Length: 252
Image (cartoon, rainbow, N blue to C red; front, side, top):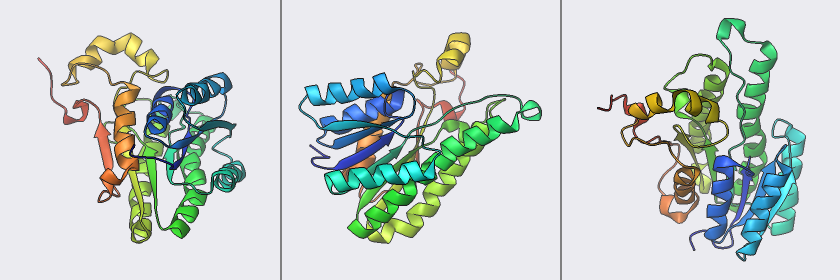
């Protein structure tokens, strides 16, 4: 088991990519804290699945946009389980709209959750990992940061900033054994992408060389790699996992 006895925190862990990451980490031996905001039943179902397989997991409700709540969550699990080895910042929201019509409240909400939430959990976890002289932080970004879509100025800004934050943190913390990377998924079969997939699924698949949408497990496998010793010489990177979508090729 590549993550045996490691302690992992996964935000947005109840559904989609977060759920897949929690299950994959537990299968590799990690203790997992499933952080959720509104999906209580889903988060508790993840915990039940992990414990049924003999793993250890807990669920905790936290609004990642609240810095005090994030810090308290990290402190509690560090005290209970002795340390924090892995953080996955997966929690995120979308509030799409054309830029000139965008409600400032929707701009703020997306930035506070996606970027602010990442900072709010990175800050206390990085401090712990710095003292431990080791740790892994994985930020879930998006190919949208570089392959921009109409009506997503707030979402794109948040993910582009996460990529830059990942690189800046990596430079500061690498000397203490804390490695920070990001994963940029393409179109993944999650609730967040369902509306777009339902409307333009066939058209989108023509732009993806592997001719399918990704599954949450495709992202989870990369997260396991980045969380394990297999990635001990990888930091400050944004790993694109999109079936080749970002290559810009037109499939026949």
